[in-house]
Image (cartoon, helix red, strand yellow):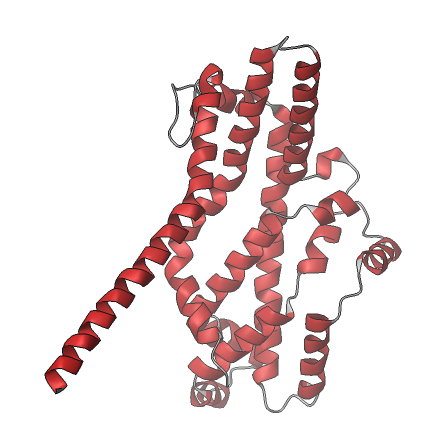
Length: 298
């Protein structure tokens, strides 16, 4: 009887194993297909783009050459990299300092700060108050209008706080304090080196957030010289839609130029997402570890 139950259990485990792996595989294919399709469209022969289903048809780097030779995109690229590096660095520093402060039992305003952190997770001011605040602080049309609104995330602070409380022994901090080290020394010489996993998680989220920042740039940045790659991509998409409309009205006149414009859009998308795709594999192991540990309750 026990042997039959064991065999039945093994069969059920095998079915569940196949089912779970099938679901994960299908999800991976659904997730990867848009990336493969966009890449295939960007490198295909412009006159054979309508034939693309998954793999490239023909081969052409003309769209990438056009993107590289476009001077406006490099300015937008520089702005995006600058905002991302500065914003992500400040986000990590402020988040780690805030989380470390909350772990200190002697901090008298600890409970009040936790309540203040929790309020924005459930209540948001909205666009109009945010715009008025940015304008009153004279941050409009400056890089700080992009960096400051997303500098501190309540979720990131709470996650970093949980990570510190569950992974860094209090005895280690007390020993450092007995050796004469102050709080800043403890934070940057002990806590930060031991928090690589959670820093990788916060850093990756911050990088993706600033890199993909679109609405704040559209709302607060007026000068084109200060705008980012996402706004440049938006202008290309609008121009592409206008080109298609004009081509339809003219019954195919300038069809080759329209196809080139469509391919330029796909090449620009690849140009935009490539840095994030290249960075993620190097942070993946820290990302998974940080998520798992940072999600544990105290």
